Picture (tube, helix red, strand yellow):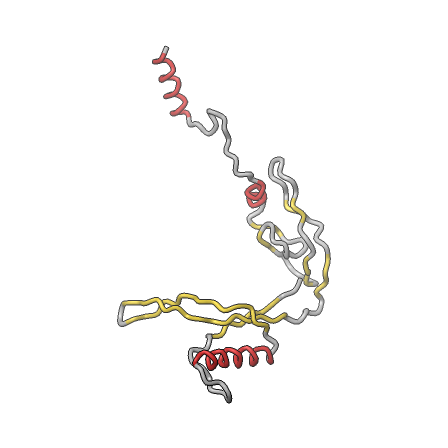
Length: 170
């Protein structure tokens, strides 16, 4: 299991002057290039640029939304000592006639205590208790088809009304 750390930095607002770069577009591109090269020198891989909202205070009680451009980088974390790659033997408990879901290979830290993981997490360590448990397995197995039985889920009051209505028709 490869683990990553991420770093988000503000995108440059202004262009940086450089020899031979005369247009505003070229200067702006130069600013981006400088930022990307600085981060790459530190071992960060460029992922993407994002435009995200930022709610900021305005006056005493107001707030405004400013849109911020940021650059997203990531790099691999070093593999920790004592972490081994092992196939997970455990599968989520099937609900009803749903098939069991096998989990793939995940790293398991040596000497780990009680672990929990979201049900269906492909990177869950071996022996982790699936949370929330069987409900997640049944939700994943749900094919979205509703029960078509005419009395399925009908309350006693509705059944009584149905009987009265059918008796009035006779």
